[in-house]
Image 1 (cartoon, rainbow, N blue to C red):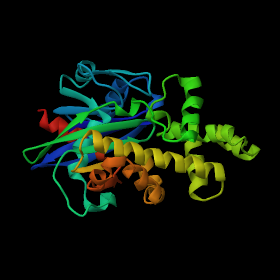
Image 2: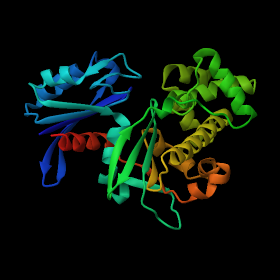
Image 3: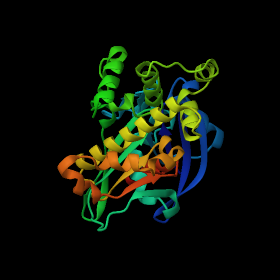
Image 4: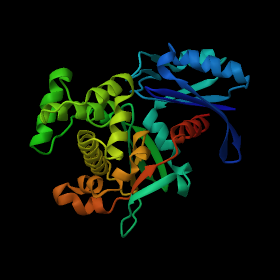
Length: 325
């Protein structure tokens, strides 16, 4: 059996896969709230003891920068080590990869109904791919194309500098620089990023939320409340905040398309994209994607797809484990 994991700041998914020819078949999967556990080792031990299956190889996609099979998670107080996990798994081979790299490994397993296309070029070219995923944080990865195969690689591009494009966005940068110092794209393109934008707009427009809304934002996930009110057209500031974030999503997706020369496609993963699909299908996203001056035509030749299958990273990590055996 192959054990795989998709570890994010909010949730940790763990699964068993069984090889079936050239394919892997999902047998068991469980979801754990990440913040309720002190370590990944604790979760893995609980999962494997519960199901009593022998692990031949394991791979975990983790939100963070992997170095020497170790990582300090970006949005959790965990330090994960492959050696420690291997010991917990009775010596089974364990491989750690970035969560977006795991997502990239899973792209070729996606079925037609598991993606939504935002842009189809007139001519389809073969070439590199890029992946950008907004969720609890912002992740990015590339897939290098060589000899008819794709080779995923990790990046930490989500923590690169946020680049404002107009006076209001410059004001947003200044607003966020006060509490954070360095302002990355993750500060404006993530769940927390949406809330950051919303708070800025209240300050910028000299408005305050109603007492009822302020209480909801305090007691619930603010990003969920803001996006819900925006999609239902019930609050103007929430609408403006979501539209700003969608524009940032398009702009940074265009940036990764250029950085990786992603003629093979730019893919949007993560938990946010499927929930705001109607906004991503609006002209706002695509215009921000294409607005790169002299390189607009290049970007018009890149397919853009939204990943709907929330288990893509989990599946990808399993295939990575199989390949590393």
